[in-house]
Image 1: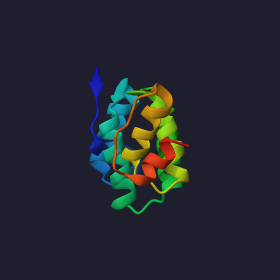
Image 2: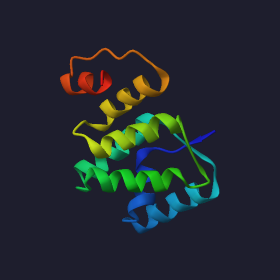
Image 3: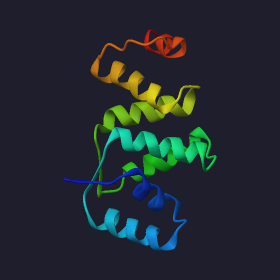
Amino acid sequence: MKIVDANVILRYLLNDVEELSNQAAKIIDNNEVYILNEVLAEVVYVLQGVYNLDKEEVTQVLIEFSQLTTVSLEDKEIVTQALDKYSKIKLDFIDCLLFAYSKVRGDEIYTFDKKLNREINK
């Protein structure tokens, strides 16, 4: 299994540092790569917090990225549900992942976050 970290994904998506972006493209375009949810959460954080993309842009970019034939997500259904929720509501991506674990797998989520609890219990 070949796992890529957030920096490789970010260079691939942003194409902002020529040498590193080219290396990222070679890795992702020529290998089946596995993306952990934790890594995806870091990518979301950087795209929104550092590069100032809005939630809808982040969601669109990551949905398109996840549809590449060489990319496998840790749990595509969870990530898809989390990205959908993330683009529509004021929760951070980690909370949206927790929401998705609750809705998709039926996991019980314990949190003091009122907004997250409200969404889970809808």
